[in-house]
Amino acid sequence: MKIIKADAISFKQYYPHLDQGILLESYFKKNGGLDKMIKKHRDLSLFLDSGAYSAFTQNIEIDIDEYIQYIKDNKDCISQYAVLDVIGDAQGTLENQLYMEERGLSPIPCFHYGDDEMYLREYLKKNNYIALGGMVKRPKIQLEYWLDEIWGKYLTNADGTAKLRIHGFGMTSVSLMKRYPWYSVDSTSWVLTGRFGAVFCDVGDYNKIAISNKGDVEGTGHYCQLDKHSQERIQKYFANLGEGYAIEELAEDYKKRDEVNILYFLDLEKYLTDNPARFIQTQTTLF
Image 1: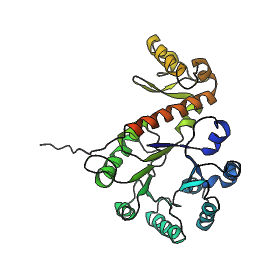
Image 2: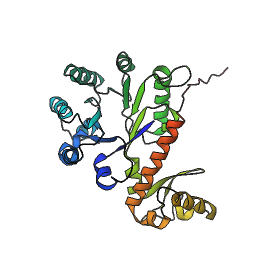
Image 3: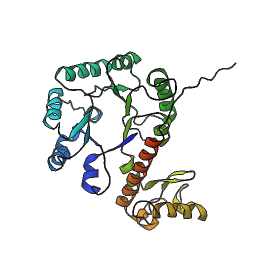
Image 4: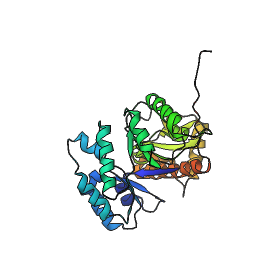
């Protein structure tokens, strides 16, 4: 599975020394750093998101013809690109998909949380790579129920493997990454988690811990509140990660937290590539 780091602009600016693979950025940032990044890094492998949601929240309309031309003008570094989706309008999204295809492009179609499943069935007729969207800020329990239904009904073979390539837009939950046989997901967790003072780790029951010394160090789950044995295990994990990180620098420097979070997701990506998930939906009955 590919875990694509979203916010390519920040990644290329601060962490070019780390393994990057495909990065995701939003067309909505065209005048906010995207153009400059592409001109500077023509060897970039970019997954371009339309930025429709960001535009929607700011009541800005994206011109589909300009989006199409931008993809064509930068085809040497845009390896994948999504349809210009219409937020809250599944029919409009489908029409944009067909419009882009008629103009020689092959955008990845996007089926959103809450859309009528007829649209997913339509995309499945001729596409081997489909994205699931509209998942950001949904409660995890609600999202898992929906994903179970969609994966179980349409996307998996009898043995739990994926029938086709599926991308998860804004998939931030590690447990949901592990639950389904995604081909790819993207997430800003590598950067947002560090900026909020926390780090991902792979130590026993610990998946993520608060570590910054600038917040509430007495809060439940903060590194400072863990027992000595747990602290020692976490210290060892970070000391052996990459070139090694000390707890003190992670507590002080958000860029160091970003780095360990990137390395965590690189390790998770390798694990899920070597051990791909299988999803077989089980039904609970009373009898």
